[in-house]
Length: 595
Image (cartoon, rainbow, N blue to C red; front, side):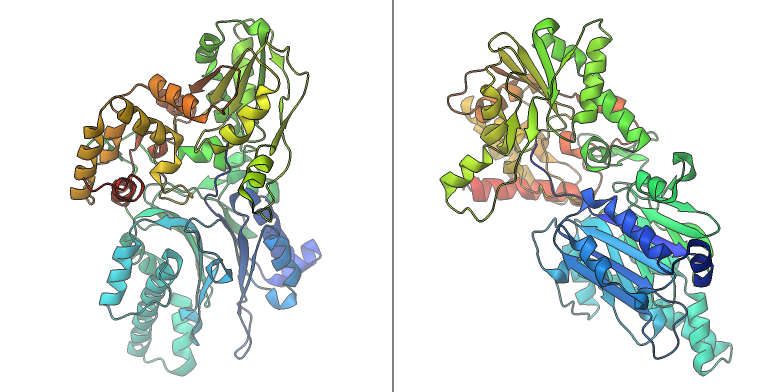
């Protein structure tokens, strides 16, 4: 598949004992920094455009720096920032972030963490997150109506300003409390630093946002927090013992870094916040009502106690497969495709070679071959495809770039019998189809297979994501392009016109009208059109596509039912609004029609 820039990764560590304890026990003042480095490297899959780290030193005296931050761009950003860090970065609170841009905005100023400075320790705020907000226009308007003038228009900066504003109000509330207790001077400051309630700040900030997020932060007075979106779209896991409290985007990251069992680690619940106070007290606070007990019908939201919106793509592709549950889920995704694969090869396992697209489809491949074996067949396994080189961006001529792109993958020559063997090859998803058309199908055809069965362990990806992944345009998705092509071929242009009018008139309503585009067609009809569109000119081998069914996805990943990529059932109003707007933009800007 074409690699998706997606998500981000977060890591947090709070030391619960004096710094001297760790230096004596572990032999270095860098104990927490070393753990933070490992947690960030173990999540490098989640962000390779930039990285940042922040620290708060509770022992700093007046006049000394107590809040530190380092940021860098590029795939080697983690190494770069940790090379810069010296003893001045010693502290008790640490936070790290790995970035993938979901907005296209580049530059160090967009790399997390973001920092809001103030001479009052309690008013300093450092923020990072794995998030994408779908209603940033509304939040921007809310801030400007209050008289604020944000310096940058972007969800990260606006989140920082809104939360910073609410933190200021919390400090002012405590200032009044301190005055009522007849405190003066630095006694007021100590009272404020010791009594900040981040739950108050979060409860007056996060309900303004629509989107998927895990938001993490530090204050200069020593508060640490992480809050998860009320739909549970983005993941967060945490652990506590008598030495540390840690949080990360993925469970095996914590397991490996601290040598723990999976059952030792807890998942932050939807709408919940993990808050560690200045004094080290740890508590869980429900910031926003858990909304996972609400599901979408085709037209509205209806109660459903068993539903949830945790992202299924995390299980299929984004998260590391070393998680014990994700590993088994990916195997089940592959195994469940066995009947459809057997049908595609007419049951001729003896003349079929099974393989996968490296590297994320490997676990699903094991499940697929297990399924074939359970039918009492010997399975012929070969590593047919190799990931070879990356396209060099300095080559600017279009024909040269296309030729190089065609050789991103290589094949194992002699791995199947030409014109006799079928080739079944599994990938985790088929999104845009560009790599299949420009590289994979062309190179596989050189092996002269009798037939290529291209298998996707996920269903047809029909809708963009608006919660942190870089696919916001409908026309990027090959399934959508196939449906539009079928509409035109069969003279159903009225479907486009009707859908456009409904989207244009009902952007803010809780109904994804774009789903109407797919209703006239079966999955198999769209499969056939995708093959036709992606088949390179001159290719000889027949191609058949096999996609996971929605039912199979839910069966394999029963605790992660967020399937809006495939069904269009967006969990939040903002997602629905954005997909309707995306269709309006497609008609007006791509089809160049005003219907």
